[in-house]
Amino acid sequence: MHGRQADRDGRGAGRAEEVTGGMSGVFGHGRLRLHLLTLLDAGPRHGYELIRVLEERFLGHYAPSAGTIYPRLRRLEVEGLVTHHAAGGRKVYQITEAGRAELRQRADEVAALESEIRTSVADLGRLAAQGRPAPGAPEPAVDPAAEFDRRLTVFLAEARRLARDPRFTEVQLRTAVRVLDGALDGFRRLLR
Image (cartoon, rainbow, N blue to C red):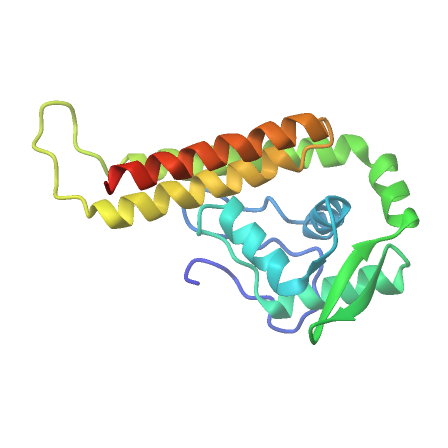
């Protein structure tokens, strides 16, 4: 993916990964490591899934390489903060109690990082919006399928983030599933 600085040697856990569009340095100084713990606290995942979650979260503008993610996961495992098991030919990582304890101890850092991520994603959205014409100017031709895909990616990333919030109750999750089912039914009705 263009705009990202590859962590080709797999070391450098403290180096920032940068993307164009103003999202620079969010994951500097070991913060990607901290965010990986946060993502694993929401549930077990394999490395490729973590890459996709990050890509969705950053609207396709940031996707760490396998050479960035897997060395960090191995390091977290060596530190006893995550463990893994094999499933379907993949390593599925999950946070340990020691990993959860680190998140609790660093709760302020986690909150600050989450705030910076939200700001960066909002900045990316604003930059994308800057490509729109000024009021009164003719609208450029927009590929409706591409716009639908872009908005769906944003929706999925935000919906997943919200649904994984620990404050989201089981009842709220069931209601959210019904809302999604209703939206899908609405799409089907468009084709009738």
